[in-house]
Length: 617
Ligand code: ADP
Ligand code: MG
Image (tube, rainbow, N blue to C red; front, side, top):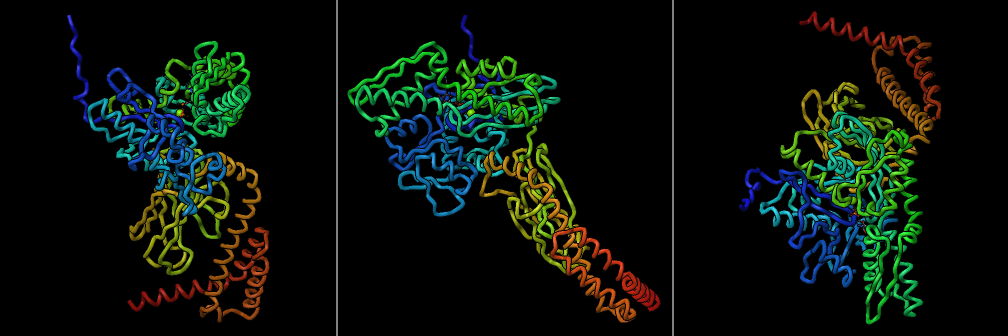
């Protein structure tokens, strides 16, 4: 008897997809009744290369067709655009040296890539990949797809996350959530079902290596530490094999193929094919037929393992640093998850197992786990899967500028997100009507050493004496790592909000450098901060004294008292520009002391005035 196919498609409100937007490859997945599932294109392919090309008729094409165009039209084809997402020209000078395609430099902050006669921003390029994935999903599922969960590296900062969301929007996808790649991989393995545990996610892809250590507590993931190398991956292995093959060709054919860009690309494909085969068989052959000539060379595992040993060692060194940052020993890792196509290499697996002293998870396809996990998260959002919380952390502290060029931090680095903080500030000048809110990112104490994210004015606040206004500043980082800053005049309720979409991003190295610098300069910074705070205090008391000298109470003082005040002012001014905050504070105290009678007299006058006032009433 035949079985009828059951149509599960109609009972759902909408399909939320999960997307792994990778540097080399991208995949899309969704949740069906049996679990997460990768969606194939019309030809049964799951992997969409993250390559985009401008076709003859002026359209952006992505995926496999673009990979073909990379051979014939490299000048209008781009890859690895993920490296440029959310970053400014200034941030990626080193990166750009490694990119063969040209960058339009009409603006110093926005990266634009030249494809043929047109230019595109990195989110526009990524959007083409996302559109391809979306089309594949719509064709396979037979329904429109408009909502997605997209994964990003754990170390991506606000700007890089925002750029990823922008790419989604450009592709017609509402990005409901950005999920860290290691978190997604852990979800794909259902590790959230454990009660507690420490998970290491080893992600060795095409061009990047990432190691992340997560803590799972009551079903909540928290990133403890990340490390890695943004230029270490399968590409490096390909380059090793390619160099050998090109040298062979030079001796065998008497021809320098390295000058022939199509020849090099074809040889690259040949070595990649052999490399990938070698993960399953003990020996593989690199084969190329090109312009009437043929090349063949077999490579066995022993040679291959020897060639890649230094590359594997570099990934292990990152793992050790990551463990050190998380203050953990390898024995404390409960689960190891393998992610990325390059973890198919048997030697990589044994090396990782030896380091962590635990058998890594390799049951799922390593190039699919991140997309599968994204689909699990999509299922959670759609209500198909029991709700779980996923926590991530902010890489750097966030705060605002206060008087004296000093930073007041609202959200500290490594806070789990979503996070919020509210603090009340006041005005510095009598009758002040506008307040400038300057949003900063970084670990240092002074504004000049932090990164400026945004500036905005809260206008037309109620004019009051200095120090009387109450301005509430609220920072809110949503689950996607996007920062919203709101300033509100507590008396009038007037408020102003900005969503921080910084045009510059930071590299992981820069984030680390900023944190390191804050440790190195901690003492120096603290001294400078104390000096600046003392100067702000000095400004306040000098201004108050000057104001009091215009009051009738001043006239009531004895000559001696007046001379003492003038001399205390002079002494404070004399140390004001010095670098000793204790000395400044000492002179502030002295001036306070000298003006005590004056202050009392003023108070009495005020009280007398008030009493007179009540009598009149
Ligand atoms: P990314 O996350 O960087 O976009 P992937 O995780 O898809 O990339 O990994 C792509 C890399 O994996 C490529 O360098 C590819 O050659 C490599 N790879 C894929 N399959 C194998 C295999 N069987 N053996 C070795 N390397 C492989
Ligand atoms: Mg990946």
